[in-house]
Amino acid sequence: MQLVKTERDNLLRPLQTVSGIVERRHTLPILANLLITKTGADVSFLSTDLELQITTRADFGTGSDQVATTVAARKLLDILRAMPPGEVSLDLTDKKLTVRSGKSRFALQTLAADKFPTVNQATEFGASLSVPQKTFRQLLGMVHFAMAQQDIRYYLNGMLLVVDGDQLMAVATDGHRLAFSSMKIEGSFARQEVIIPRKTILELQRLLEDIDDSLVIDIAASQVKFTFGQVELVSKLVEGKFPDFQRVIPKSHKNTFLIGREELQRSLQRAAILTSDKFKGVRCLIEPGQLKIMSTNADQEEAQEELEIAYQGDSVDIGFNVTYLLDVLANLKIDMLQVSLGDASSSALITIPENDEFKYVVMPMRI
Image: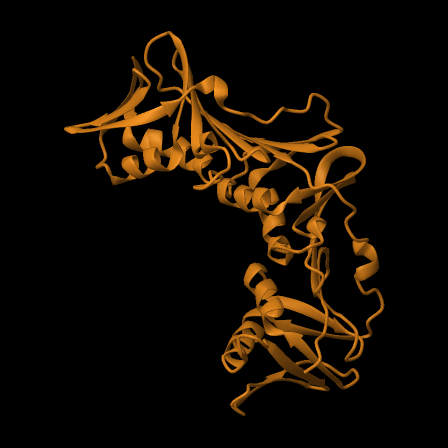
């Protein structure tokens, strides 16, 4: 029975969309597969790891019958990537999925579709909002790098999403730095806070495009759903209480200066060369009119960079993990940024001049 007949690239696109979350090794072997469901011309592709589920659709099914099967996601994807452009067909016969293109033929084992576990979707959502894909992708880009990776405080291994009135806020922290970004949305919503897992955020960044097409976000008590284009992404939420980020953001630092983002980034990149892998610290000496950036390593090697700044505040001698500074500079697409400091033991605040929608707090380190 023929399921699909189309150009190779038409089939590759939905497969690449859903295959990103498929793990090669899994306690349930069927989770290495993706679920293909054909109803007439409509074909849906679904993958899940039981925490996150992605579905996408296309209209290149053949025949009017309804059929479903599951097949190894990576194998099917690798086969199609290795094929030259041209027409491809998928046929299902005797529990084998056959991929044909030109004179190439591959027969893959399948597992029964009714054995494939899917995420139970919520029926009630507390908030449903629509934002442009491009804007939400930018919001994620401003904070994602501050998420923890494998912290024992599991609620830090994700991103806090807050809906409040006409504001949508994203916050991420690993305990050493915190990134906050916000955007205006249409409508007015009761305050709702959810923690979205790290894997979901990274997958959204991969799938969302820099276009003005709408992204619908539906937030339930233990689940969030993102719908855009032909894609539906459903994710479980992280349970737990996210730290009070408003308390972490400094409010009254009096030592403030503006600096060019690229200029600061290049100086920090050069100074970072002489830091060690274990100790990524750089020392920053801020004095009226200038900023000195210094680094040393165990071999007694030294780097020093001097930058001119319009600054008339106190002299501050403070150390930072250079990676935390470079992360934010790489993700901010602006010319100038504002740095606010207290003393050597206070966290620094990096913001965008005359813009309250972004804040980045970084803790100092002892050099």
